[in-house]
Length: 161
Ligand code: MG
Image (cartoon, rainbow, N blue to C red; front, top):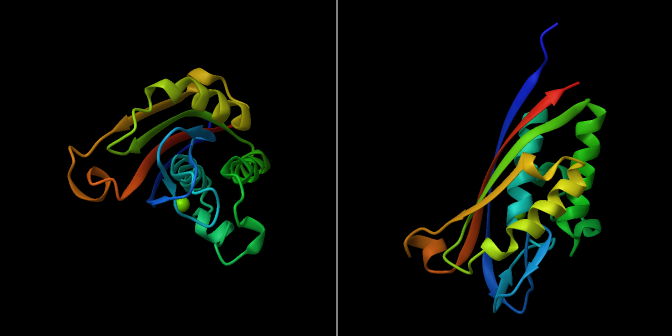
């Protein structure tokens, strides 16, 4: 019988505000501002989770972790990712690969790639080379370029087996 593969796509955006830590891919990034949100507002992990949920046919993170739910106030998004990974396991899916792009004018994320990959790989119980992290600016255009917020997009491939 042919193996079953599933693709998923995710997108998320959060506003940048003062007085919050910037958490991207489960890693604290040095920056004068952080992302606003009910959880730690880890936009990178939110896009990744939306991609995983998409591949599973399980809606989106707003459905599973509503911001009206006090349990998720200030929660680390790595904890939410653990719940999504449990949903993957329940449906017997494993990660083939994930490709995640941060959309932000600054800071340079390159020094954090290794730590982010390690963090995500650990939660997903996948080898680090299955996870790609990259970043793009918007050439100073729009909300990302004017440093009003950060966005992320993610694509994942899952295999049942
Ligand atoms: Mg979000």
